[in-house]
Length: 141
Length: 77
Image 1 (cartoon, rainbow over the protein chains, first blue to last red):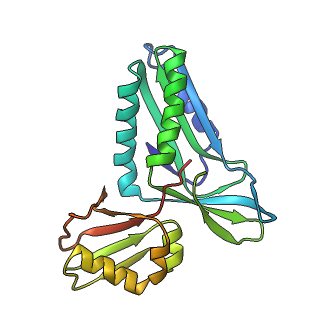
Image 2: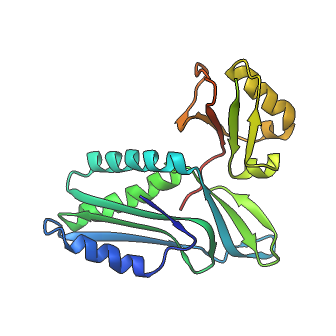
């Protein structure tokens, strides 16, 4: 688990895939890339999201997520999570998850499960920043 | 005892601060009352409370220098 300052650079994807390639027991890597969307609320467009995190708790909760996913999907070999903190503009990456497994089905389902648990369990919050520089906290839908 | 309190997400906006220090706290209940007296609007929001990185419950006890954290619903991703 890594908290990136600002957006996750797109190059992190190739770095993770290269790292996964070193594990020859894997037959599949499943990637989830979450990016900030230019949502519209009350006629105003989102220009960025400011993420805050309770960092002392993030690592412990990420460990629980790893254990939970590994207990459900025995074929999983590795899970990598990079989440942003701070300001991420629309179109930039705020979450990158890669799950490596022996076979594609476990990689794919475990990746979806990991994203679900991140949204539910990771102590991270988001504040939408609008194009007029106003802002409001937002919960996951 | 002295306790540091952190507020995250919407609760940092409601209280206007991300950290507040309390002195002469007698118990967890005493702290919670002091906080809701200082920030009455906070009671309109849903949140959980953590003590030193762990989610607290009704029986949680506080010790001198503990860190208490007000956590609104998580919104990662």
